[in-house]
Length: 291
Image (tube, rainbow, N blue to C red; front, side, top):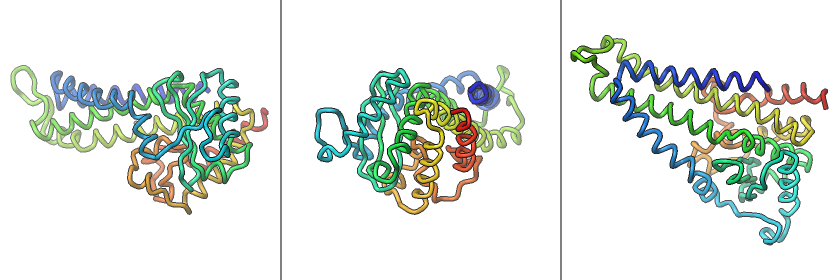
């Protein structure tokens, strides 16, 4: 537990330090403030309203104890989430179903009191009850640790760094009080191109560390690490075989899913929002001995 949180803290500190270094060199105090405000404005909006937007994007339909969506075939899924939320000592989230054949699931919402869990029809049909419990426990772990907030903060700073790089290209970089360049033109050019890439790499590393932690805590909530390991392997296999048109049209939502729905595309691990499935499975199987 401590290792994953320490890694997240170090990565968050690294991206903040990168923002300070690049901002001072290319944007100056004024440029840093403008870039941060622009990025914060966009991401605060996303933090408050992205849950509704992404659920609408995937055509998700709410399931609860009263409605009869799907002729009641998803009631067991709803009650499963309710039981797991009680195990995790969390408020009951809203529960949704997406009419998609590719097995996948995600959690969204700005805090545990405004959380939503969504699963595809494909995942409900493809997984056993034990495996589905493991997946939904993983998603509840994201809710418990407020990973949406962590993602928003990292995205805000990464966006600000990209904006500063743009300001540097447009206005020639930061200058001192006497009008001299803060850094040499060569260094400034390197920063303009490399800093946004470095920020993205750190942001993706933060995302991977949160996935590992959600696996660990999800296994504790469900009390069944092997079930989650089996589910991850199945979902990964399906992701290579079944296309997801919505995910392909909106690749920015891939980081929300338990397995990137574009896993069929070849990504280097450094540029991936998710750890390699094999490593996730290995860690979960190592946990299984304790259970």
